[in-house]
Length: 93
Image 1 (tube, rainbow, N blue to C red):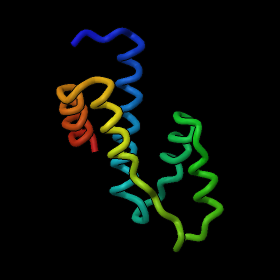
Image 2: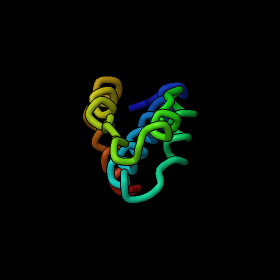
Image 3: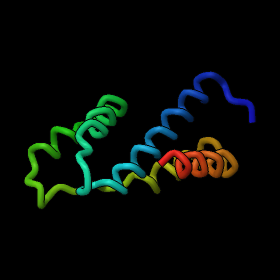
Image 4: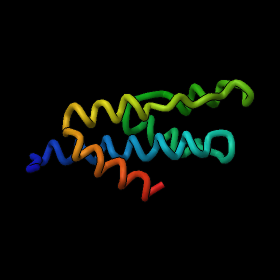
């Protein structure tokens, strides 16, 4: 599949989002994830780091975006690209 430069950047962005999602889901509550949350906020324009810092420890939760990201990757790039991304993310994290 030949991708335009914009589509390659989009693919990299979504792959990184998926990798960060896997990391947060795996490490949530075990290690400090504030740096990852701040980076994710910077990348996606969200406010997760601030919301979590204002929430008591017992109530802090992370809601995985994996199904949503994978559906988007599949719709935009197809099953073959999704399979490559999934394999890469698994190897990274």
